[in-house]
Image 1 (spheres, rainbow, N blue to C red):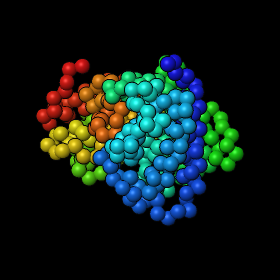
Image 2: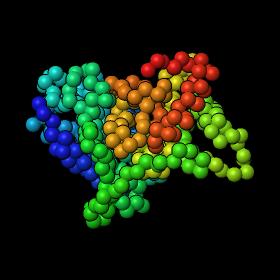
Image 3: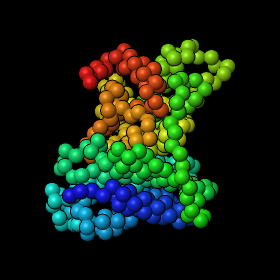
Length: 339
């Protein structure tokens, strides 16, 4: 079955617009930060549960013409198994034409307190069975989920080999205008934003030590009388990549699975494949996305596999920073696999 990428993108944009409108209409509710339930991947808050019926209805409708497998956190199939569901209900997984992986609200913790925008993420790959991977995704869309005081929200999309595109939507009139995506061309990180994910207790020390190591090697000993590097901890993979594409960040990375390994800890909360559903957009826009070892980022389309990644605005920054990441990892006993 030949996939119509334009049709896929249009459908996903419409879905995410509905999610955005639903969340804006839910602002009056006071309990969006309450825990709904927990999954193997993460905590599901009341705000996440608000959009689950929307996703179900969307997939039911789409599956009338295109049988699909949905991969998303918090959903269950007819056998009570979490993480994936086949549409139409009752059909066989092997008969699906596509796999749709999504994070309806990436950045829940920021948006549920009306503190910072979240993002709705979705990617579509031809169904290659359980072996379908992130790098099989051929079309992806990400939509900004604004805070209550925002008047505009951005929408980004891409299909493989066709570049990335974006628009800025006026939330009052619903009019939109083209938005240029332009990752930084700087070859240095000084006087720019760069960060390693340092969201939650448990890996903060290692993340900070690695960042200090990178800065010391690239710029020199820290001069605490002035700020040469800025950091912005955006608790949202889609948001982190958006900051690269918008030219705001020069480097950001999430290496939590490696930090757990260094400390001989079981893998804790970290990035998963559904958080990376829109990697295609980042790469089509010109950003460089690798795993923590410098290999092309990849993973199965599921909700539980832990992923580590590094994102660079350009290849020059990658050439400067990646060897320093590897040096830090080796010094702490991590073996860097051959590419």
